[in-house]
Length: 512
Image 1 (cartoon, rainbow, N blue to C red):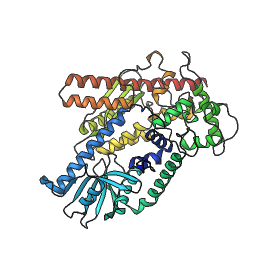
Image 2 (cartoon, one colour; image 1 turned 180 degrees about the vertical axis):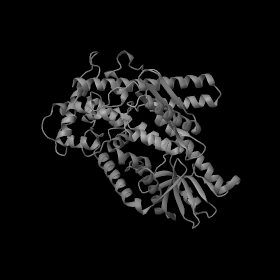
Image 3 (cartoon, helix red, strand yellow; image 1 turned 90 degrees about the vertical axis):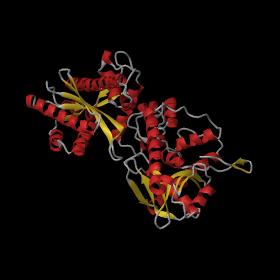
Image 4 (cartoon, helix red, strand yellow; image 1 turned 45 degrees about the horizontal axis):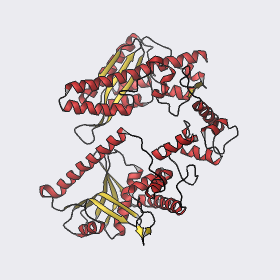
């Protein structure tokens, strides 16, 4: 967003495509950004996010690939009919579009009513109309991306450009997603109208945005929201309190974790049983950890723990490591499960590695064969994992390779796989805003609690695997081996954590 000078003073806000997304998701965060631009406050310190940075870099790389490919398709080696508009202003772009020799324009400046931007690609179709297209690394059409490209098309149409009746997203798998503009018109108008209303109202009040103002939606996830949540002990920090529930609590005068924990009366719009659970969750999160009790907890449904299968000598504790950024030989070939990690009840770690599609297929077959052999010896064994990802990924890999689809389905449908996350969520509350397995580990890992150094989180593992691939591609076998060893240790620890969690849950079922 920008605030251009009009007669020596700041004029009304001019929004961008990014503002459309931000305003749609978090009005409070949008207003914080506006206040920074207006000099009303300092910028919020953003948390480092290596995964977001990595995806951003890959997105820019992919946009350049698409640009080069379209340029070659349209202009050939000479580039005839192709305009690189990065240094052109809006009027110069319109002149280029009016030139019958122009077939494609990259990075075209957009200037509409209180709206500016830069469209990735404008493609002239056989009828002489301009298709407005955006390149997105995602493999599906996201609502904010559709609104972005629709806003560009609308601005060009308002400037007199003959625009195609649809807009296009060029997705990360190479596919083209075309959407009729008329299908997006109403939502675009609503989002833009609300966005400008929020900005105009706030700017007219001549003060910075106030946290907790019920007029503005807060996502509770962005840097601006997280900073306020932490500073104020906001009720939005309580696990299970989403943006809509938080709004209901605010309307009832409950703004902090303490107020939620101490409350007793009903809250309009919130089911009584859910309110009881949220109050209990808030109380646990307010308890300071001690060496004797590093993570406060309570068992609220012991029957769910009692329903877990008992131990077997053949039990397996399983965890995938995957790289969603991996790309194969074609644009549609993306994402690789590079490690099927399995820890036996006897303490043996059995890894199945895969660094390409052929190896992924072999890893699937090797893992399933190994598991079926164990089932012959221990028919009562179970494969314990944390979250539904392992089940979903196994099914996806089998379908991708057309291998062992029936065998995988039999294992999953036969109750061999047991999701401990589902057991935790149905039976246990802990004093943490997150129920990731890493946040649960103070309950049961004791002196073996993972070190803060090295690979400690799923995002770290993605970056570490990228470093392995870079080292392998450069022929640095020592560095590549070291990166793989870090990943192996990380995965083995996750499997051990799953084993310890299973034992902890069973122990608490017995005493509850």
